[in-house]
Amino acid sequence: MNKEINVDYTDTYSTTKRNVVSLYLYLGIKRFFDIVVSLIGLIFLIPIALVVKIMYMISGDFHSIFFTQDRIGKNGKTFKFYKFRTMVPNADKILFELLEKDKELAKEYKINKKLKDDPRITKAGKFLRKTSLDELPQLINIFLGQMSFVGNRPYLPREKDDMGEYFDDIVKSKPGLTGYWQVMGRSDTTFETRCKLEAKYSNEMSLRLDIKIFFKTFLVVLKGL
Image 1 (cartoon, rainbow, N blue to C red):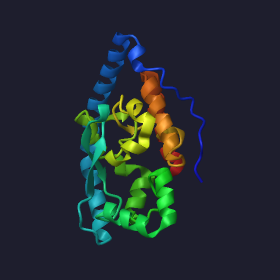
Image 2: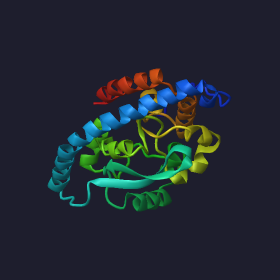
Image 3: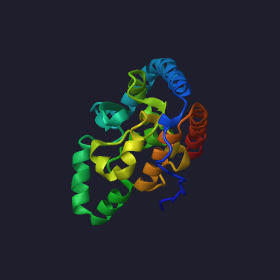
Image 4: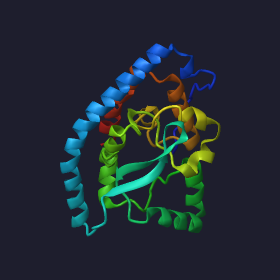
């Protein structure tokens, strides 16, 4: 059951209307934090990746544990996105086959751009998603400056048309490891509501809001365990 959230969204407000000095100070602090914390996180990513690899090998899956995909970044520029693989190999191909065969699944995907009970997710993948460990390789993207710890969801190029009027606002900011949508609605919102929340974030982003989202993320993850 999707949870509808009342989003007070308007595209009349823009970060460009702020004091330029305060905006650049905020962005500078944010980038410094991203570099330092992602560098520390990458050290811990190595043993975690080893454990994930063993989990997959035990289940008989010897394919790469990493998943890469083109995603939409700041100003609409695409970049190579990293995650721990949580689905079977050739997941996109299987998805299109499923949607072609099952009209109900196709309807669900059209509304939410995802499937609630996705049959492509592996047993190890379910654990990784529940604990949000599948997101950790995005530390690479953060360190490279393609993403930030707090930002909007890194959308797929094929989702650009579905983002509609919200696209220009959403791509004002870098995609994030966590964001306004994740702490407000997590996975229980429709695609349109998600876009509204993320357009709102791009237009109202601030250090105070980022700190609030960053710490609230831990509460959301713990609640989901």
